[in-house]
Amino acid sequence: MKRNHWYVVTGGPCSGKTTLLQYLEKIGYAVKYEAARQLIDAELKKGKTLAAIRKNEQKFQKKVLHMKVNQESKLPNSNYFFLSVGYPTALPTINYAVFTMM
Image (cartoon, rainbow, N blue to C red):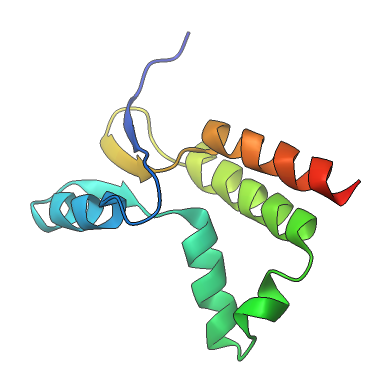
């Protein structure tokens, strides 16, 4: 089993995840922010609306999962990283999105 020094910060909306990550980043730790937020921000910069970005929830969640897996697969095991909502925690969301689309 590979070991790493990754810590996943989880919590509900507005619970302080981003604030904590910003503080950790400020004092010198490496952080990765929530992939959904990164994806939404990138799409908004392209001129899309939030409604358009989230129109197809299943497609959106799959993009987020792909982004998380891609980013986290490139993190070195030897460094300390703090991640907002690691990809394993996204699976129930994706399952819910798929289930509700049926």
